[in-house]
Length: 384
Image 1: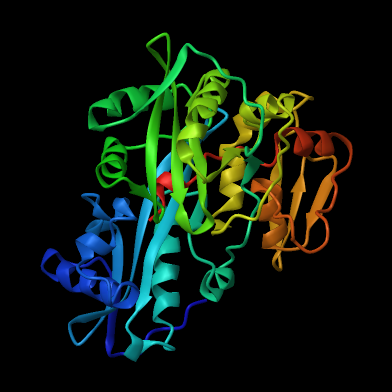
Image 2: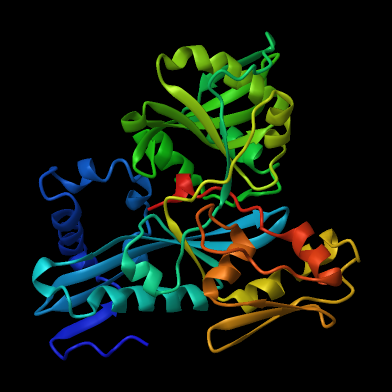
């Protein structure tokens, strides 16, 4: 439980319009003190410029000046056609003269409460500070990773690529809308990424894929200069055409290496396996928290019924006691020691996690092995 703030502090609360410039200056002074104005320094994180950013920021004030702040973003997502809600946090900062007083914990706790009230299922954090682990976030194995250097990717002379521009937002939204695992992304999200040419802290480009001049998909490539790497962080459309597009793009990358991230269970991983490309599950560089796992399991009841071999005639229930969790189908039980084990069961276990996840038995084992971990859309375009 967060301790009450000392009486000289006001908040956490939403900044008023006339206070917004001072909140921006606080964030700039903490994160980018030597890098110039806010509009320039935040370009790698373009969703910081969306129209509702002030309304989705909380700040704590001392003598009328902001001294701690946090921003958030919420988006609905689909996992294999079933709706969940993902929340992001960013720009968590405290003025140097006010640290060590629990202010960051207070704005984080208030944001988590907002997420609970608005039905957020998972909170994604780009950072890995002890503050986040203390709130229950943890490393996860969110995605499959495939290294494409030297891979014999199948080419197709009918497949071509071109870089997307602002006039292509409708086409991008339509292509994304055909995916069973995706963000229900706002038009503004696409616009900001295309305008600024960045996402999640790095330059990125969206490549439309055409076959015989018909749009069949897209690839989002992030340029990670420090690693001499081009990385696919989102894809949509005909997977065979996407592989052909990657084959045509690879010669344009120069000396940069090429790899790909994809959600759990994405068919492109199976196609790459046919090409001799293996997949591993890396530790995600950010952290994730399950906000209200009991509610999330209830939301996913149709998903489990659809995918379980037994038809889901026994609904799954999750209970908690003293920090431990029990997943049951009414016949068998799976005991999870703590919040981390529950998170890894739901989202994916990182490769260096201690120990092994406990194994379910009976029909519950079949349900877990068939339905989990969840296939979540990758967060990179919408990170703040």
